[in-house]
Length: 113
Image 1 (cartoon, rainbow, N blue to C red):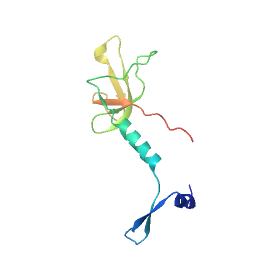
Image 2 (image 1 turned 90 degrees about the horizontal axis):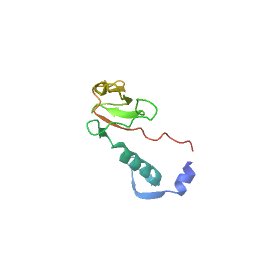
Image 3 (image 1 turned 135 degrees about the vertical axis):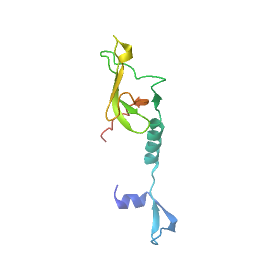
Image 4 (image 1 turned 45 degrees about the horizontal axis):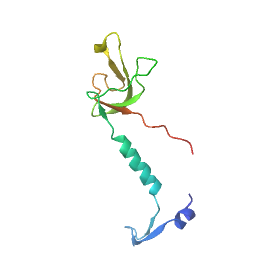
């Protein structure tokens, strides 16, 4: 959107910034909604003590997920060892698989407009 379109769709606010310029308020409903949706989805961390990611039907691994040790965020996946469940393990870099405390599904990838 060019400046002329922004000006047409904007409302001037009756205040000035620190430089004496009239403030221009541009409608931002779409951006606000997208940000609110991102925030809503972002805070869905699941403790590994409560639940592990589902295993893929055709392999012993989970889908890729976001993982966290409580300090950092990375991507990773979980390996289900059917022969020895005590050897199940997280693969996540740079977070050690033993330190993964939380996970959540990856967000949907962006779509071209």
